[in-house]
Length: 490
Length: 79
Image 1 (tube, chains in turn orange, purple):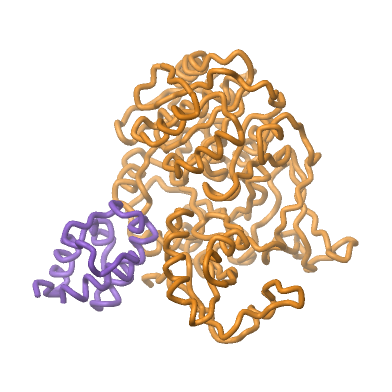
Image 2 (image 1 turned 180 degrees about the vertical axis):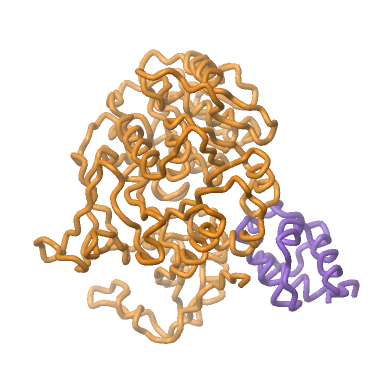
C-alpha cells in the first residue's frame, strides 16, 4: 500500500472501521480492495482524479486507490457548488471525477462536460472518465492536490508529492508516538490537510481509523467513539468551543488518550482547560501548528511543557527546522518577531492554479515562507503571533479577507478585517441594510455560517492617499469590536 | 413564550421569523450546522435562563424537541 513501506508486511490488525455498518476492514482486505479499484480506474497514463470526498469507507478507499495507482488525487468537499465544480473541471481537466451517487447535481456537470460513467464495482460512488485524455503531462512526483481556500473563488491548489505525504505522516507518527493500538476517528473533513494527516499517520503506523460522517456536535459521534474504542480525536479551534458546550468533561470516553489541536490558534484559556481535562483523565492535549503548504503539520508542543509554555506551538517535527526571518533582514535573536520560515521534507512542490502547472516539479526546494509571524523563545519554542497578509481563520476555514471584501462590495463600500474566529465587516449606517442582506448571500456561497460575520458601523471608511482602505486606521478607530460569544459553560 | 422561542431560533439560525418553525429539523437548513447548533443552545439558555445538559444539547434536533426540553426544565412553552 502507498502508506506502508514496501519492505514491511501489511499489519495483521484492522485499518478502517465503518461506524455506519460496524464492518471492520483489515489491512489485507483493504489492500486487495484498493488494488481492485486502482485497476478499475484503468487510465493509460498518469491523470488527475477529482474526488468529491466524504468520511465514508468508499470515499476513503477511492482516495487510497488513486494514490496507490500513482495518479494525482484532488479531494474536495462532496457538496460543492456545481459552478465551482465546473471551474475545477475547466481549470484542471481531471481524467476521472468521482462523487457519492447521492450528489446528482455533480452528474449533470460532468455529463455536460462530456465525461462518461464507468463501473468500478463501487455502488455508492459515481465514477466518470474523460473520453480524450489531456496531452499536458503531470509531473511524476505529484500525488496530491489540496485546496487552500475552501470551495469558493478561484481554486488555488497545493501540489504535494509522495515524499511529502510519507515524511509528514512519519514525523507525526513519531511525535505523537502512534502505535498499532491507537485508533483515531474522522472528526475532520477528508479534503482538509489536517484531516488527511490523521488518516495518513495512522495507516503508516499500522493503527486504525473509525470512519463516520457524524458531527462532533451529535450524540452518534461520541457513541461511535466509545463503542469502537477510539484513543484520539483531532480538532480545530472552533471544535474546542463545541467540546466546551457539550460538556466534554462529562462524556464517558474511557479509551480516550490524546486530543490534538491544529488549524489555527486556540485561545489560551481553552488550552489550559483541555490540558487540565486530559491530564485528569491520564491523557494529553497536543497543541500543534501546521499549514497545507507543509502537507499538514509543522510543529508540536509536548504536553509536559504545559502550562509552562502556554500559547506556544512547540518544536518542529522530526526532519524539520524553523527560522525567524526579520523584515529588516538578519538573524533573529530569541523573542524577536519575524516571518516563520520552515524547512523540511514535507514542504510542498508549489502551487497550481491551472492544469499546465501540474507539469512543474519542486519549486521551493524544501523551504516554506509560511506568511505567519512568530518568534522563538529562549528554549526554541515557537509562538505564532499573527499573519503577514490579510488572511483569517473562520471556523477553521482559511479565508482571504480581500476576497471576502470583494464579494461583499457588490453594492456598498465595505472593509473586512480579522476578528479572531470571525470576520468584522465595517460599513456606514446608510449601507447597513444592503450589507446585511449581502452578507447572508456571501455566507451561503462560502458555506460558512452567517455568524462568522459581525457588522461594525463606522462613520466613514478611512482611506489612504491612493484611495485604498486604510486598514491600520480602521484598527485604531476605537470602540470595542463586537465579538461573537462562544460561551463556555463553566 | 412560544414567540420568544421562535425569536431565539430566528436569531441563532439567522432565518426569518416567518419560518415554519414547527416543522424545522436540524441540518434541514444550511444555517443549522454544528456552529448554528451551538448558537441556538446559547440563545435558548440566555432567553429562558436555563442550563442545558449534554443530553439536552444532543437531543435538541427540532423546534418541537426544544419545547419538550424546555418543559422538562420547568419552562411552560404552550402559550
